[in-house]
Image (tube, rainbow, N blue to C red):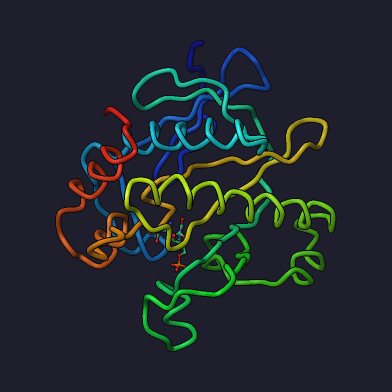
Amino acid sequence: MKKLDMLYEGKAKKIYKTGDPEVLIVEYKDDATAFNGEKRGAISGKGVINNRMTNYFMRLLEGCGIPTHYIEELSDRETAVKRVDIVPLEVIVRNISAGSFAKRYGVKEGIVFKNPTVEFSYKDDALGDPLLNTSHALALGLAAPEDIALIREYVTQINHFLKSELSECDVTLVDFKVEFGKLTGGKIVLADEISPDTCRFWDTKTGEKLDKDRFRQDLGNVEGAYAEIARRLGITV
Ligand code: TMP
Ligand code: ASP
């Protein structure tokens, strides 16, 4: 499969057209941003890890009955995916308080929730991805009620599968963000990525942060944390 024109360049990935209008190629970059692009940098080798880890999780989830956009890993940074229209919602599941939840509600990090929370942000960089509820999403016409219901079902299952996979290598899944898209024909599938950029992973024994918070908070050893998560999952990079 050959990359043709670049369709879009985001903060962490480039998307290319292919000869098939229903197939795109994603290329993962080492670039990293935080705080809606205010903080910029690079995490050496991140593109390779995020590509391989996303594909590892997408294959796992497909096997568990979650439809995804994944087609085939093409190289260490490139993957063929099905073309989708992205549903403009960032869907965040939280098992433990951290990040914007802790800040918004004035609580410490590390509170283990009895039940996971599901929240939506409106995917719009110019607005700073504002938090919204289901009725806001419906009022804005961002998705149909049945799409939102299905997305809630999928993320609950995704949380369950990822949590149990990670717990086997002593990693606690604190929270994560996923995105969904619509295939031609309207079927909803999991899209985008699942990586240390989009999840919070804590070492279960030591509580050490093994994700992009090391970059966001200047904790050091960012590359080492990404490599450690890959190593524990048995992903060779
Ligand atoms: P938050 O606590 O900053 O809202 O982040 C919740 C989760 O979403 C966390 O695992 C990191 C991920 N995330 C993204 O993938 N992209 C983003 O732009 C932000 C702000 C968070
Ligand atoms: N995606 C965020 C940004 O817009 C970074 C993050 O906090 O993950 O820069």
